Length: 205
Picture 1: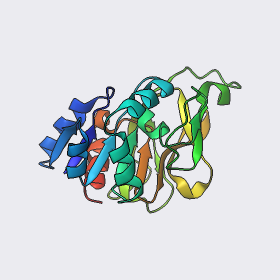
Picture 2: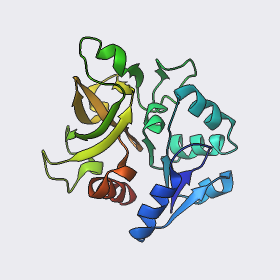
Picture 3: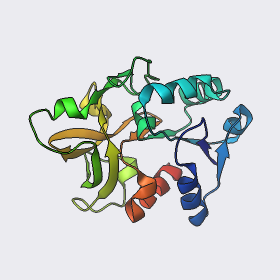
């Protein structure tokens, strides 16, 4: 059973529809008891980093999620701001992140100050897996595209935590992982068959 963590933000219905279409067991989790029933977790996120962290920290599910991820090693994937929450910190705010994947979140605007590229980074872009990442199995090399909408990016402490990269003025990590923890900056729920395959891969971990 996959649990979509409902802590107040995120496009849960799109994930729910996708997994139901694939006939993969899924539920929207709003209580710690529901988190206990799950064997995989999805942490969505949109908007401001601090706001997302504050809502998550105030959630009655937080302690159970932390225990299940860090002690029981239940797989979790963070989406968009949910991925950024996996870092130690973000230049977008002052709240500490979860720190499950070593790294920090940086401003894309500051990193692209030498270019005239529009902000935020929005639309379809090519994604290149950096190795044998389980979330990217069954994809055709050099033909993998996902939908992006973001102004900040995850900078891992080491390339070993990078699953995939994307180019937008600079080459940046758009998918990260460490053990049972995964994160993607793009929106698989808006990325048609590419996103469907990635979320199916996550379900099959």
